[in-house]
Length: 122
Image 1 (cartoon, rainbow, N blue to C red):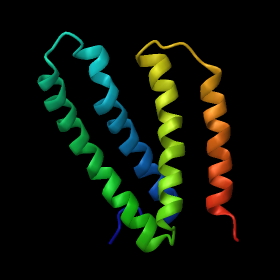
Image 2: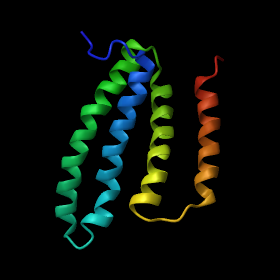
Image 3: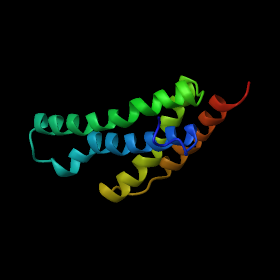
């Protein structure tokens, strides 16, 4: 029995994708701050370790979304990309101290268009 059965399946999918993305973002970009002076292969090994945690959330998210919530693989992928951008922008600004750029807004608007097209009924 699913321990999260009181949460709607589509919301379970989203929550698991968010958790997955937090780990993915740290795996892909966290080493730029924390391991900047370490050899690349050390950063890669640490990143792979973090990325393995990502898969513990990503795989169930996709299975729940596709097999139980009735989402298509296209819908899952676009959800993933929207969540990726939503996690990455605050991460880049807060953790990596990158300035806000209007390009984030334009990318977000493009993602809104992608969401519309992938989730529309036609």
